[in-house]
Image (cartoon, rainbow, N blue to C red; front, side):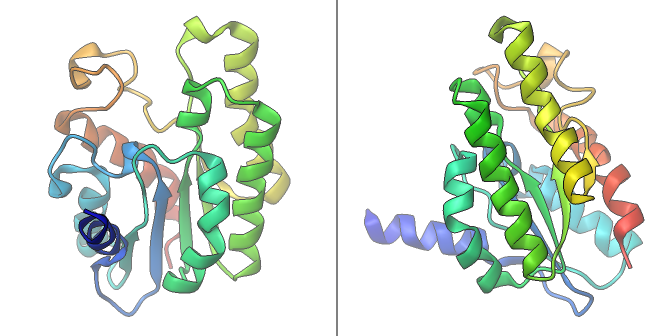
Amino acid sequence: MLLRLLVTWLIMCLPLAASAGGTILIYGDSLSAAYGLSQDAGWPALLQARLKQKAGDYTLANASISGETTSGGAARIAETLKMHRPWLIIVALGANDGLRGLPLAQMRANLATIVRASRKSGSRVLLVGMRLPPNYGERYTHQFAQIYADLAREYKTALVPFLLQGVADRRELFQADNLHPTADAQAIMLDNIWRALAPLLK
C-alpha cells in the first residue's frame, strides 16, 4: 500500500509535457488534481493542450495533492522547487484551510512562505485566489478572500481573483459532494487561470 502511494505521488509530480521553454508548476489541492475525474479532464491537462497550441515550448508539472492545506504546501515547497526548478509556479492553495475554519493569520503566513521561497528560487508566481460559501460568516469569508489580494499586492505577483469564478454559483457544475467541480467546469477554470497567465508567458 505504501509503495502504491509513493508511485502515485511520483507520477503526479512528473512533467505533463516536456519542452525547452521553462517549467510551469501547478501547486495546489484537489481542485488542481482533477479529483473525481480522469487526469486528462482536469484543468491542468487542458492547460497543457492550450500551452502547446498557443505558447510553444513549456514543460507543465503538477505537484497538487488532494486535501492539501497551506501548511502542507509550505512544508514541502523547498523540496518541490528543488525537484522541478520552475520558471513559474501557479499557487492554488487555501481552500481546505477555509473549509476547515483554520486561523487566517496562519494561512496568510503559509502562503507568504510559499511565495517568498518561490521568488527566492527565481520563479515567477501566479497566485490563485479562492472564496468561501456565505455560511462561513461575512467577516471570515471577506478576510479569507482579501488575503490573496493583499499578498499579490505585497509581493507583486500576478493574481487570479477566484479560481471558481463562473462555476461556484452553478450547482450543475459540481460533483455529488458539492465541493469538487465536474469535467464541464474545467474549461471555465482554465479560462480563469489563462487570463492571468497569458500575459506572463515569454
